[in-house]
Image (tube, rainbow, N blue to C red; front, side):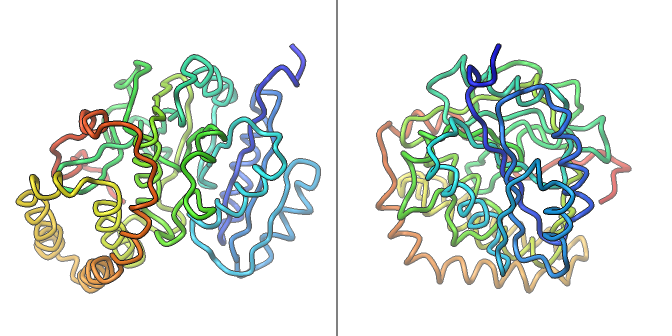
Length: 338
């Protein structure tokens, strides 16, 4: 079959001081079987000469976008998404973390899945934790009635989750988005919410897709290996701050007030529990970042609530609520160290 008979996919990779990881990711992409795609690398304000090296090494393979400062995951992707949509050539956009490597057929499987489900705005591959390939990293997003989000299937055995199924939304570390869906849900020319900077921006876009009537599907045959946390660290002050702040923003931006009141006791317990668990585990250095994140989250609700009013809501909340679960924490297998 000729290349132009395949829907075009634009793959977007952000690089921020992660040259070696980005090179490893690009080398794995060069082996994929899908014929009609392009790779866009956004150098998100790296301090060194990452952009120069990537441009020289992959000048025939990638389009390079240079940004002078780190705009974060959300706005960094937005810059590339706008360029792709302006060209009007791509049918799908794949956001892909630079600390990933992919199986050769992963994109073919994702596109096939998207074609089977034309109502889907996003498709999730099976993300495996590269450092512990016996464990899952993410097979989508889980959202708890406590107001906290989790990677669906995180740290569970890799043998699980082998059925193609509808899910709440996708982890943006590896997600195939339909261009029409992204155009449909954008707010003020933003696809990902730039105010989130990083973390929970994929929950936000997952909820907005659901509200607008776009479905999300999980494709177990598409395999991506994720090294996890190489850019910001899984237990850094940076991560603690943005997760604490954006968890609040996502809750008040995307969930009905009636839901918040109905589950207020769970939400308050989870807020207090996050502080208590980190205290009991001796993570005292993270507590100021968590508290500052929560404070900034509540202080910044004004602009978030303005965006809330602009979300397209075409479905009844019951269509979204059916995916919501009650979950307090992730269970990490014994002996696994970060």
